[in-house]
Image (cartoon, rainbow, N blue to C red; front, side, top):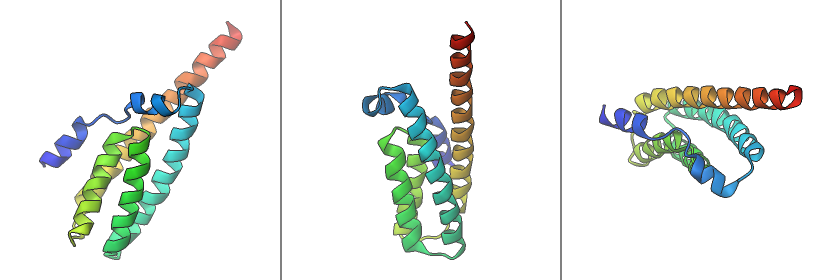
Length: 130
């Protein structure tokens, strides 16, 4: 699917957007971790809403996720949520494919965040022991 390929070409996290709002790296990590919690909660809600063909809530949840992600530069997830929102707004429930693409992007986001936090902890340990 061209949309799937398009989403894979969108940067996972645009740190330039995040740095504009939060120049402090520690604050960036905190914001991303908080967003991660919300993303997981909203994803669970979306799965339930899709199962129940609840178009209005699918649209609202996707919109909420899109806005939160876009605000801090988590562009790939924001883009997928925009597609889900648009699909629901047009009266379609066939967002299962988008949901699996969203899931993959969330896994990538989690992995990226985990690596960043481990790297930051490693650098901090080196500073203390160096």
